[in-house]
Image (cartoon, rainbow, N blue to C red):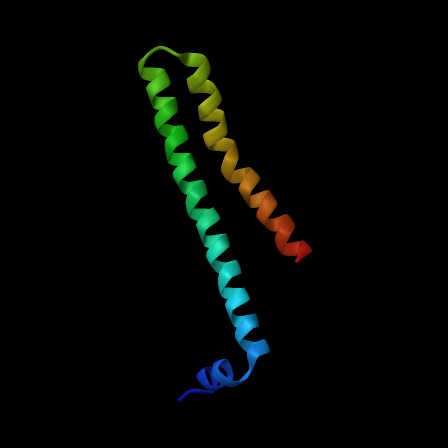
Length: 83
């Protein structure tokens, strides 16, 4: 039995801390994957707008697709410095 497993079984505070860290990591990864899905959907919508001559929608979504990663990087850097 490893040291980690022994602590999980015996120390309640350690078990709570480990599970809390796992929940935070899961939440961050979920948000990251969701942002990728949104980017793909905005890209598809921009292509659809171009294909059907809806240039105002296509331009707006194209801007969102190209600006979103920059905004996500800035927000991520902000929270990394803050935490």
